[in-house]
Image 1: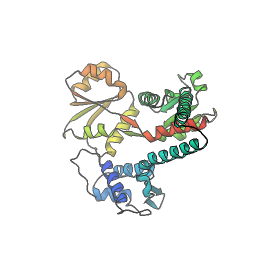
Image 2: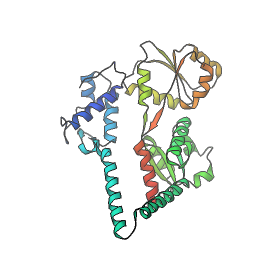
Image 3: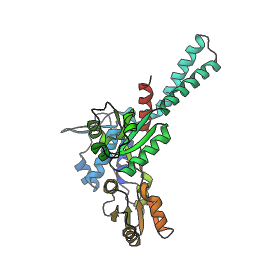
Image 4: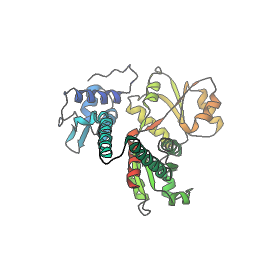
Length: 318
């Protein structure tokens, strides 16, 4: 396995893609054991966190499986092209339904009308679902709640883990009428414990740092001074971990979450590039103007996770 440190592509993505290619090409087969994280990190001269991130991502996708004390193994080859088969499977199901409809005397127009009515019915059901997105920091919760609402038509409000834990600033009417609570996988167990007495459905979704953002940061020359401005310390630590996992360990970066205009301007003045969280982008752009580059650090929700929420809601509403 070779790593191209000049490509701008995060190292963990390169490791992940190489493993996927080896499985597809038959170099790695179901049941084959991979090197330990320590072994591979030493071989490639990268951090163990980088290898851990690549392995964890492949485990979550079902490509690899990890057994405590035994190691990490290739799980299933078909997971790699499973998505390519989904469309064909749906088409086959529609063909079967259409054939049966014709057999019982329905014509094509009647079949299409039935399908359209069913879709409208499901859309109406979804529009009446209230939900909450829970994250450790409010700007990330707002960003994800807005993204899910836009992509699913569910009515999602943001909330932090601390609000849920302490009961502060909670819209009680909305909470009482909430049918679903969504959170990222790293908070699922904690959130379930916090709401166990309220009979609320809790589902987890995967989130990943935007590859485009990381590649952009990686392309800045050595010695670039970064200033990171966010609403919370939690967001700063998430960014720090994401950059380190991508192999960017020694960035010259200072971070603040202060709202004091003087402190923000001081950081802007001594930085070459400003990294902002979504919740502070508008404010910071007004202060920076065209003088310096601004990079918004985005996290994105895994599309399959979001689709799974919709599927679950439709199934539960039957």
